[in-house]
Image (cartoon, rainbow, N blue to C red):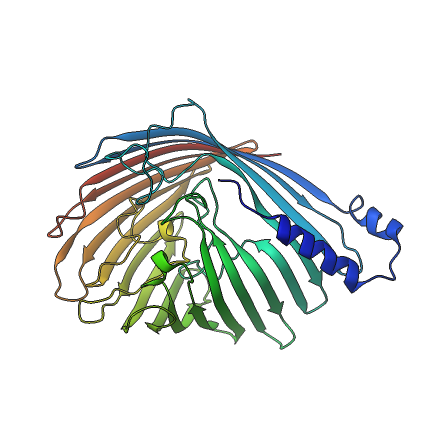
Amino acid sequence: MKKNTIHLLVAAASSLVCAAPSISAKTFTESFQQGSVVKVNFRTRYEDVSEDGLKDSDALTTRSRLSYQSGAWNGFGFSAEFDDVTELTNDVDYRTAPAGDPNNPGTAVIADPEGTEVNQAFISYTTFNNQIKYGRQRLILDNARFVGNVGWRQNEQTYDGVSLTNKTIRYTNLTYAYIKNVNRIFGEDNVSQGDHNHNSHVLNASYTGFSAGKLIGYAYLLDVENPIAAKGLSSDTFGVRWQSATDGKFLYNLEYAKQTDAGAAGTFDADYLLAEGTLNVSRFAFTVGYEVLGSDEGKYGFSTPLATLHAFQGWADKFLNTPTVGLEDTYFNVGVTVAGAQALVSYHKFDAEEGGADYGDEIDLSLSRKFGSVVWTAKFADYSQGDAVAVKDTQKFWVMADWNF
């Protein structure tokens, strides 16, 4: 699962040297010593999966992460991050990808393959209003519904390319990224689920000058060049999002997007809709939401291939790929903070957007608390199938410890 990053590092270093040849080598060296930051993180997790029709899976894995950020050098900087994922029992008896993985056939998926990789490695240039990054980097836009890092999995999703953030206009934040490659959570060795070559452009603009909230507009123009993956993943998505900013007692989000075919994909047209409100009362937070990933007459379902999917439509991850009939998710969350611990109960009701078939429901539970430098988390997901017999009853359970040094 090691990723080929030599060309990125060489090109990035060459760009830095050529950009400012008049700066002395001593100043350059000092920048890597003064103001630099080194961080170490360990995340150990036990996961158990039970899915009808498949053999149960369980995994005990640790992700070890070493991060480095240099000090500034005339606005330039360098960041690198290295990850290693290890199965602690030395017995990977679970399947690590939904397709293209010949190991452990007939076994439930736990998408945490072993391996060591360069998670990030980029050159940055920062001014008062701008920041440019070139190389392998983490991208998270808005709530990660369309572009995210899939941070729940041990092998994070990162992007090879160039990104630019501009804040020249008052109250306005502009983000543009050109994506050449997506380093996916399944590892590049997986034939059908590994890295995806891209020729994609991502644009996101937000304006916070309204007292009532934040207005966001975006254009995600995805051109996936992998022949196996391109169909249905290449698309043009244009959307608008409104995030309220009230006194904190009641918050709401409204969003609409339209997705059409692009690149190698067939002809399609589908809509996205979100309406969500949260009421905060003392230690409690009550959320009700309605999300629709639309369908093109039952032939195509709205796709979000770069999203942090685990954060949406239930933690059992039963709808990582939207059904061709689309999906409606009506959900209710209750969160509470007691004695420093955060607890959450969530319920999802799933229905087909085209035809209204029952796609089942799900109950999710979580409990998290920090002790010293360690955050402990326990989660449980229970999905019950509906009319769609291809989506089976599934239960998942996690216990995780995350600590930083």
